[in-house]
Image 1: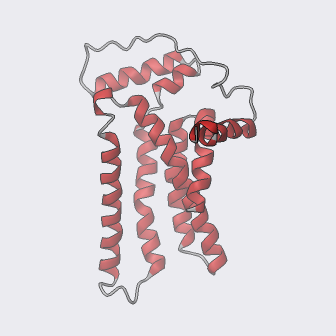
Image 2: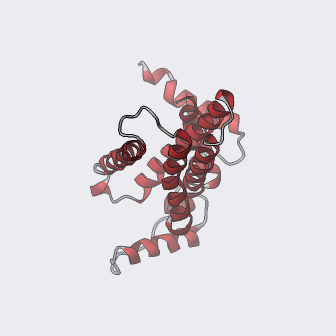
Image 3: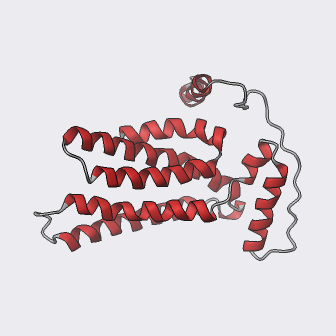
Amino acid sequence: FLGILTGNILSGVLSEAIGRRAVITWSYLGLFVFSIASSFAAGVKSLGAARLLVGTFIGLGQPAWNSIGAEIMPSAWRAFAPAGVFILFSCGELYSASLLLADDPSLLDLHWRGLLRWGAIPGGILAVSALLFLNESPAYLALRGRREEATEVLEAMRRENRAPDVSVDFREPRQSSANSSEGRTMSSIVSRQWQLVFGNRLFG
C-alpha cells in the first residue's frame, strides 16, 4: 500500500507531463515486469522491493484511468463507470482465487513463485492492449494545443461508436495559468496538489 500511495501521488504530475495513455500503459507494463521479478526474489528484502514497485505502478494507473475515463465517458454513463471498475476488480479477485485453488485447494502447500507469474499475465495482456488500442484523451491533447491529434481521436471514437452524424468540432479550451503545469517544477506541482487536497477548505 505504500507503493500504491507513492504511485497515486506521482500519477497526476506524470499524466499532465506525458499524457494519460502513457501512464496507464507504463502502469500495466510495470505491474507485469515487477510481478515477474517478484517470483525470482532471493530473500525478503528483494521480494519487498519488488512488491513495493508493483504497488507503485498500480498506483500510477489508478488516477490516470480516473482522468481519462471522465474525459472520454459520455455524461450519461459517468455514474456507472465506477461500478464497472469495481466489477473488473472483482474479476481479478476471482482470477487470483482460481489460481490458488488450482494450485492447492487446501492452501497449505502453495507454489508462490508460479502463482506470481500466473498473476502477472493479465498485466502483460493489458499493457499490449493499451499500447495497441487505447487512445489518448482528446481533452488532454486539446489542452496541449494538439488539435489535429485530438480531432483524430474524436473521429476514431465516432467511428467505433457507429455515430457518423456526431460532430467532432470543439472550441479551443482555455487553461488558466494556475492550473497549467508548463514551466513549473515537479515539486511545485506536487506542492499545489497537496494544498488543494489538504488545504484549509478540507476542514472549513
